Length: 221
Image (cartoon, rainbow, N blue to C red; front, side, top):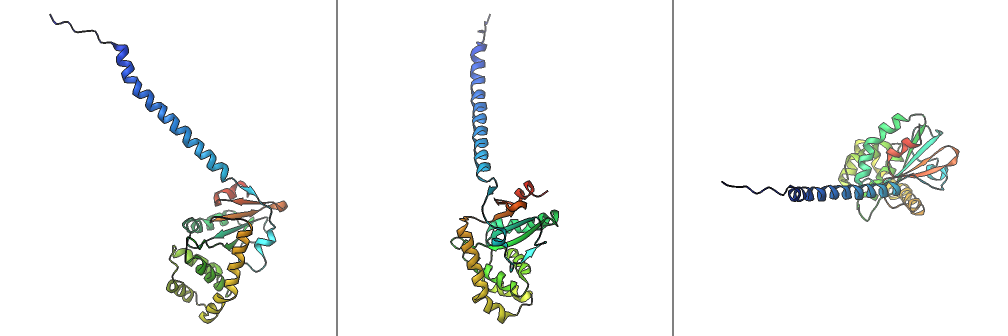
């Protein structure tokens, strides 16, 4: 008669459970690391109070969407070849519609020329169009190019807006170019380093540096 040895169940359980414990511990550790990274990211990207006057960033000559006397004013420093800026341009209209009457919007130029060789040229084109009251049309058109800012595309866009091309060229060399330079100087003074960067002006003279449009909801109700 064949006698089968009795299995050592305690050893089998240890062998089977051991790898499972390792997997579970690994998942817990990975989750803890991910949570830590998310917490650090959130801490670094929270709205930050900033000491700057609303009039300094808005100015009387800048194109603005919404009531200039609205209780909240949002200023964006953007780059026409910046991928997040291009994405933001698509969601911005819905945000402005949601807070219509309470939030105004102004765009300032911050071309990151070290990374985007045509960004400044595109910014100048927008400001030159603004000299003919077509800033927002050019702004939307430039973002619609999805980063392709060669001379031919910019010229085609300007012509499609029925701009005076002689004046457009002159302003691109003169007044519009100076506006972009002034915007860049302001961004440098504020020690901005990336785009898009938003500054939200609130009632009572308070201002906050935001990292995304989603943070507007924390302030504007």
